[in-house]
Image 1 (cartoon, rainbow, N blue to C red):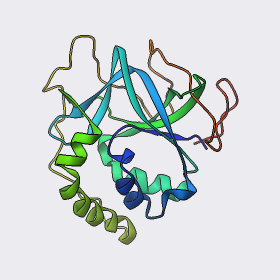
Image 2 (cartoon, rainbow, N blue to C red; image 1 turned 90 degrees about the vertical axis):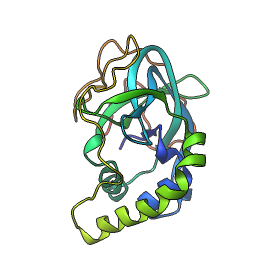
Image 3 (cartoon, rainbow, N blue to C red; image 1 turned 45 degrees about the horizontal axis):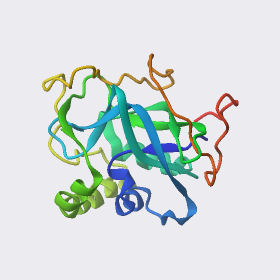
Image 4 (tube, rainbow, N blue to C red; image 1 turned 90 degrees about the horizontal axis):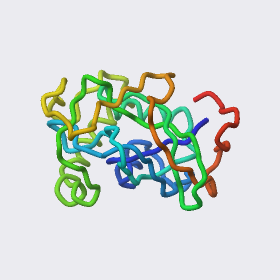
Length: 202
């Protein structure tokens, strides 16, 4: 099973532990970078999406050791605003790994504001965690997923910067072209095959 690249609120250890409902010490978490993208706010939301852009660079976390229950919980958390798509990421030694990440479908709009984890933590985290606990309680009961916050904006109401275009990953689809990538460090991450190796199904 491929590792996952987290670039937004799931980089916060309290958020990730609440979503997964277990301690993080059974996971492997390594710094990673994706190139060819910008990290912008989802329009109308406090959390981000990635938008392709030449010369862009996004730092995040590469997380290995996620099991099927973890992925089910992550999918519930992300909701309709994100799909899973493959991405090539880079680590400190410059080697390539293919990971998966949550990307917004074309109907979700970005705005022009860059997103920063430290700012989100200082401004939004305290109010976000109680809502997140209530949200994930619904996963346990099997009820319909409520929105975590008021609805995101559908459609390109806030045009991205010049050179940007919406991320267009479909489940099971290949990477959009052209899309420049760096190499990725595999050290310390379980279940990662070198680039070009036969990948296990997600």
